[in-house]
Image (cartoon, rainbow, N blue to C red; front, side, top):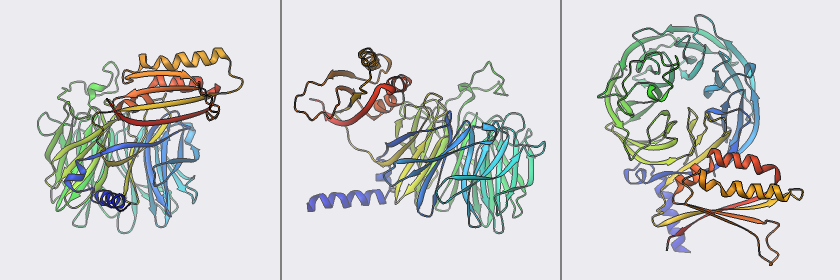
Length: 509
């Protein structure tokens, strides 16, 4: 018992030192839970702690779903709320406290409005404000929101896309209503055409805002003043040497020691249909995928610093979200969500501003803006969603030291109990569909199944067992969220009374 206790204490110490080089190099992701959403898809995900309870908000097309998140990473549905005109999808969601009141701010992309919801004690939402687009506010196709707290007031910055690109600032009143302060229309100099990421740094009492321009392939710096007005500081465009900014997408930042960094990812324009008019500048050159690091100088301007280039050992194709997982004095752990690699890549940023890969998990679904880092009791979680209309899920992961699975395979066992009124033909069809998964999903190493033959009386009514084998965690994730598996679940669900699923790792003889 003393030995077990010792191992437990050592493990807890490792988790508490997540920033050390040895521990961060061993980190990886483990799925903890997933839940259905009521929206058509999940585009944005954010989280918030209110009076000791942790909430997750998943914004899709038409509405927002609310869940609680416990310290085991389990998601529990609370409520769902309709967006203005049932439009959306909800983008750029951000929750914050404004003078004692908790609010969720939502960019309703195709509703061309910014919605403010009060977060109630239960975690549910109540709409308290609605700001519609005008010719001067650039809220059409609104995508990204950033709250900026100044000494006397708080402000909401809004970035848009497509028809009315630009950057706007609104003062947040105590009741959640928004008062327009300033808007800056996109031009040939600044990078605000398609602001899909923003971040704030404080430098010697001054506030600076950084934006990525998806359509104009670059990043911009802005000084924000106490009254919410702002001015452009500097702008950096894409090139093929010390920055990768074609389709600049997620933007975040980290302070390490005396250094401040802005980290920018991109979903390159090559990943979009060239026959459409969505991409405005057609003369781009694909020079690979990479995450760009910029150092912030004393004047708040960005300086090109480092690029982590994608290779056969990383999953960085089509980055759509970068979340800071944890930081200490010398390094930060970040999570990069990718739409085209359908993965979450963990990376480490050291004090010198150098990014290096840690581990990744192939999620089995494309991540499209829906990735959020959240901490509960020193345990780090990621909550993810997708733009896939056939998925309709929100998923939670914890970030822990990697378990050595060398020489092992994963068995995934599914036990089924059919409803009393299920016909033999329906059962046969379900069996064939399940068996056919191995033809649809290449990650399934083997699949076998059978009908119960036990006479011990302990089967609890379960009659069919399916055993699938995977070589690693990636295969299980790809299977779980694969269209063929989701279609199977939807098809046989009406005739299933109960299901029992268990997984275990075993050593290959």
